[in-house]
Length: 569
Ligand code: ATP
Ligand code: MG
Image (cartoon, rainbow, N blue to C red; front, side):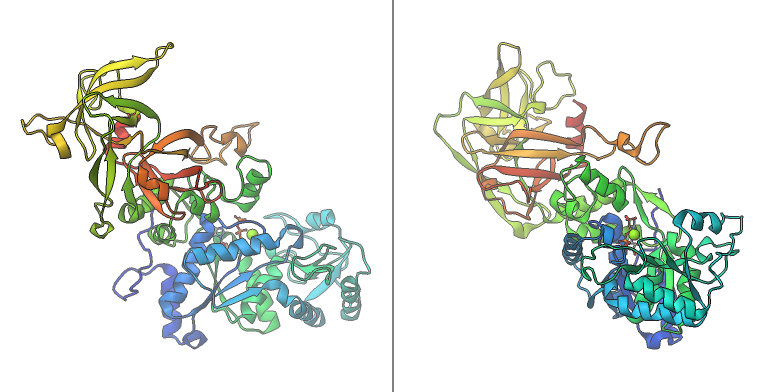
């Protein structure tokens, strides 16, 4: 795991370490390149929902805009109608905005189809493109392999006139799908396979989400992408490392066409442990029902993370922390989770919630009496104030906070032992009530009225403090606990005969149907996050929670010693 220490910083002063992209832009500005303009773009293909990897690219591109006072476009690279949908276009815009960014222009590569077509004709006329009749299989055969040169297509030497005519017929729908392609005439012996006469256009009768049935030929991604950048006046076209080998082709098209030349810069994509990151695999998880949807809180999509309880700040801070580098690495999921913890630690109000309830009856507390005790909402934020929590004769505590045959080091409740109730009193367990099967169903206890606020006047000490909820005032709720969707750090590392799906974690979701929450959570607001003391950070589930049937998601567990101790028992 490597964490780059060259993350961009808001203030952008010259003294701090600049990442390699910032350094390139600094130098460009110094040399007056592009008249000192900085214009980036985020170019998703609308064939799925955005994931945390895209967040890295978004933060980078929009971050450079902010840092250099430039511009950033949102452009949909929608050249493959068979996989693209309007639903994705909408979700992507929603996700970019939620992350806290606003684009200068909203654009679609499909708006450039006419210009791209005219440029293709220009390339035919300059002798740089030709119509080819090879089938996909033949083309693969002719292409050769790394280290093995390819062969020229038998159609490579068609005349310009013939090519112009054939391309017009392709466009007019006179040939069946796949019958012909338009190819660039570059070099079938190039060591770079991308330069071996790549395809510019294919015939494909598919309904496009924006252009409908207007076109039956569609431009390839490599032919579209750079020219789209150029048309938009993009100065720095930032993409992931897989495109390094495509850069010569990016440059070739733009040079041949003699148009504005953006600089392509590649950076390492984000990889995270315990997840898959490609849209194709995420789509498969959705389609095959391994998750409930793109926004399943276990998914590392932006919409899944949002529903889970992640904040935009935590994702932006994460991207800042991991930085930008030229070498691929895998980031530990803990880094992402820690960014959420540190954000929620500052903003989330503390509440008490019992996830696996065990009834406690305080025999020396008067029946019908309710004491309203003061509780601090957020020790990290004084302005969050205090609230009243009701204390009464019957409480719920966490099952894991009681042990019948407790070892000496168990600092919570056990027969004959005393524990501190958070914000309340010392509590002593006198009797254990069991059902016919021997399960502990209730504890008979006494409290010490002298210990209000958690201190004993006689100086006697208790080691443990546990949370609790007044039974009479408790709000019932379903709580969903999530774990990694995959059981192995690298789900793509599979044994013979297995697939990445076999690496899924069968215990990634635990549903607790009847949790008992403190009274104040009856007014829990959608979009707020809460720290359930000792158990983690939670929020209402945006899809399934109803005012009379609350559903909470655990965004992330706590990482303090309490959490560790309760795990051990
Ligand atoms: P996937 O492989 O998940 O399908 P993609 O690269 O095909 O992703 P696009 O919609 O084409 O998805 O990507 C839009 C932008 O996001 C591109 O500039 C791409 O380089 C960037 N991007 C995609 N995945 C990552 C990642 N894991 N880390 C950083 N940037 C990414
Ligand atoms: Mg893609």
